[in-house]
Each structure stands twice: as C-alpha cells, then as structure tokens.
Length: 345
Ligand code: ASP
Image 1 (spheres, rainbow, N blue to C red):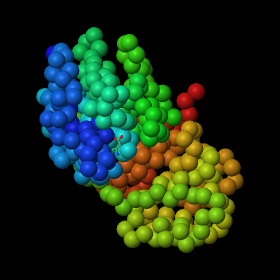
Image 2: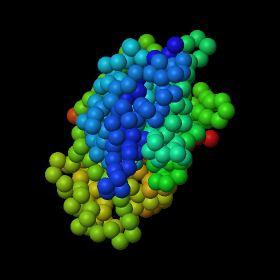
Image 3: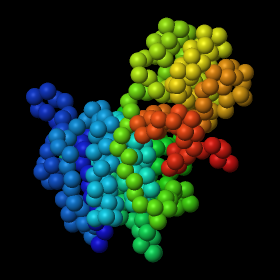
C-alpha cells in the first residue's frame, strides 16, 4: 500500500459560499472530508496535513513556500509521495518555488486544486484530487516513483510545475505548459511520458533550501514606456534582480536612455534577465539589432523560462548566494528542467 501525505493549504477547492456575503471563503478540514469520502476508501493510504487557516492563494508568500517545502522535507521518509492542495491563482509560482527549494527530489510532489469548490455539483475538485493522489502513488515495475518531481495535475494533464502558467480563470483546463510537453495524460488510463520526466540522482539526498530574497521586480516593456517608469523600478532601494519582459525574441526599444539605465543597474550589481512576453518560444538576443543594446548593457537571457519560474528561481538563488557571477551562471543553467537552452527539435 502506498502512503501519501496530503498537504492542504486552501484555494477554491476548499471553499464554501458565505450565505451572508455571497462570496467564497475557505471552509474547515472536517467539512472538506465529508465531500470526499473516497479519500479514505482506496488502496492508497492518505494522511492529511492541514495548514490552517486555509488561505486563498493570492495570500501565499515565500514563508508559505518554505512551510510547504519543509513539510515535504520533514516527512520525506514516511511517504511515497506528496499532494499539495492549493489555490490555482498562484499555483505556478508555488510549484516553481518548491522545484528549486527541494533539491535532488526523488519523490512526487503533485500540486492540484480546482476551479469550483468541492461541494458544488459540477466541481472538478474530486477528479483532480483523486487523480493527483494516484499519480503521487504511481510506481514502476521495480518500485520507483514514475514522476519524482514537482508537478501540477489539472483537468486531465500532468505538467512540470516550473513550466506552467495559469491561463484560464473560468475553464477547467486552467493551466498550460507552452514550452514543454505534458508529462502524463489522464483518461481511462493514466499515460505517462517517462522520457520527458526530470530524474535526480537517487544517491544524492534531498536538500532543503528555505531562504528566499524578495528584492526582485518584473519590468514589462510596452511601446511608449517612459524613462521615469523604468528609472523608478531600476532605482528601487535594495533591488537585486529584475525580470525584463521584452518583445518577441527578446527585443526592446533601441532608445539610448533605456540602454543607459539598464547598464547603470547592471553596474550596480542588479541581475537583469531577458524574458520574452510571448508565451511560446525562446529569447535569442542578437537575432535582431533591437536586442543588441540589451546584450551590451549586460542583460542575460532567460531562454524559454516562464516569468513564474524565473522570478522564483531568482528569489531562491539571490536568497542563498552572494556571488553575482555564480547566480547569473545558474540562472542560465537548467536546475530542474525549468528551461531549455537549445530549443526542442
Ligand atoms: N482565488 C483562488 C485561489 O487561488 C482561486 C482558485 O483556487 O482557483 O486561492
């Protein structure tokens, strides 16, 4: 029998409607259990670890990431896999953060949630939850976990968490992984695509990284962006890292002032990473002349990483390391499958 630890943080999946306000608010553990009796009647043993009070994932912050990662770390030897129930709004951030905080992970950590609360008739909650548990418990013929990485299961697909983005606030298919294929698909059977899974070396023990640094920012370029806006972001006190969201293959306006402000920030030790605003595809600085300024200013490429993964990777690296060159080098290196330096053929 497989043992699974179900870590419960909140989100729509756990919510009930407040009859007074009409709004959704987190329920309690006992109410939740009554909606999913199947949890305790399958051949998978499930223990629950509620993080009460349950929260909307808009309130999740790095302390919550650290609590989730620590829960996996502390109970690592007692369970075959972990399922984390979480609101969908920031699930991609949390999943990305945990993929970096749990180095050398060799057991499944599956995030899931739902678009409708568990008690609602057409809810997607039960299906998502029960399939996530089955995936977390899945083993191959020799007893190894089939997907021993941090993933998100939603609707009918399993994705590497640090490749995902929430794309829909309404439909059951709420997540996409534009630059990496899904790791499994759930229909009548669950079909795994093991050749796409990231495996850590099983001889190396799990390492927990809890410290993060929030002195990062996202600077999204747009036609007409002013010097004042760019300057005020880049001159933010204590700033250490910037996700620069650019156009197309990593392009930016060729204005001299932009180059000067970026160069000045890089010279002050701020790490600036180029992330394309396109959902699919990779940054390729130098392909167009309008990206040469960025290269000359010392901006580095984020390749095909998502903003969620890049931001959390920066927070994790800056929180744990001081050497700027080492951080820059690690940002451009895939640590757990979060980016592809060479595009997939
Ligand atoms: N606001 C909710 C949350 O992220 C939405 C959801 O769970 O789907 O917690």
